[in-house]
Amino acid sequence: MKKSMMLFASITLAGTVLVACGNNSENAANTEKNSQQEEAANSQSSEENAEMSIDESATAKQVEAYKAITDELNKMKENQDVDWDLVESTYTSDLKSAVNEIDNEFDQFITTGIQAGKSEELDENVARQMIDKGTQSYFYQKQKSLQQAVIDAKDADKSDEAMLHFNEIKLLAEDVFVPTAEKRDSYYELEGESSIVENINSGLAAQEEALSSEEGMEDFAVAKQITDKSIYRSYYLASNSYAEKIEEAVTSGDTEEVQIMQTEALGFYQAIKGSLAGGDEEAAAKLSELFDLSNDPASIKADEVSNLFVKAFVGKIKGYHEEVAEMAEEGKITEAKEDAMEANVFLKAIEMPVNDAIGQEKADVLYADAKNWYEAIADGNAEEANKLSEQILSELQSVVE
Image 1 (tube, one colour):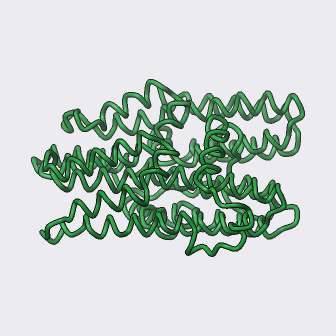
Image 2 (image 1 turned 45 degrees about the vertical axis):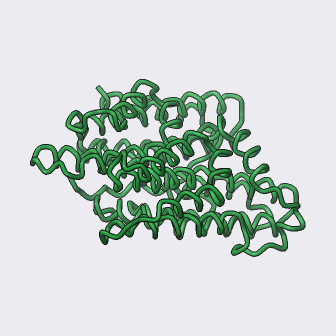
């Protein structure tokens, strides 16, 4: 099922030709929570933060702990004994508290993996994936809270502190997100504008440029979604690809590693399942059920998983279109632009199944309509935007039917 994704029509914003999105709706439920968690996780004063180097930051120490844990766990690949006490003590001392502050479900997932590995209740490779992917899910949510911390610091005229938090984001991207995205790019043969790695790096570059500008925080808030949602797409495609691999393995009778792959699918899904439930709760719940380790992996079918993901994404896109229309009517153009961008980047995420469902010719029209819809919103042309929105949602309905 590997195939190249068709290039999505570029959207120009503040001199950056990228597919971007805003933060209002996607993060509305999490912004206050994440801001509070970030404040608790970063107890240093502003003065201390300003003087702190990136190597001394909490994020850097957590990444080093993650590397130490994965290095130890990877010994099993060479048939060497794993020091599970070292894994447990490193996680407990350097990560557990911070993980719990973000989401205690992540901690439960990781801790279960550690205990199951120590007791040999699970295959050690299954336990390894629970720990690895559970920690990656934490880092994704940590990145989101750091993004807000950058904005908060900049708003408080604490530029050094803002840059420190941004450098923490860059560190996570380099050491955690990009290596994962490279695997998705390779599997789905994604290049150019379709490359997840290129979009992560382009988003970071646009954010850094905006952060250096005197009046660039509105652009920063938009550009951060390029970074954030590219990572999001990486996790979605990771889960989706493992569903494909599981079905292939079951069909061929090569089932030795299906539970390991199921664990990887579940681990990556952990990071985005709450967000997807906002698009289609039933579809998101079904994906959780399929990936759950108590479920028979033979019941995982690639087409069903792909369709469930598409339903959830389309549900989110519809929600953004409704909100954009309301904002446009109220004259809230800045907010409307951000939500319109959000909708379009989620459309980009499901390019492959959309192209398969309606064909490239209709897909080209759909993407052009999405680009023009955003531009109509940006220009304050509510009538044109509403017309295009109806066309987009009608076409998307045909994708999920």
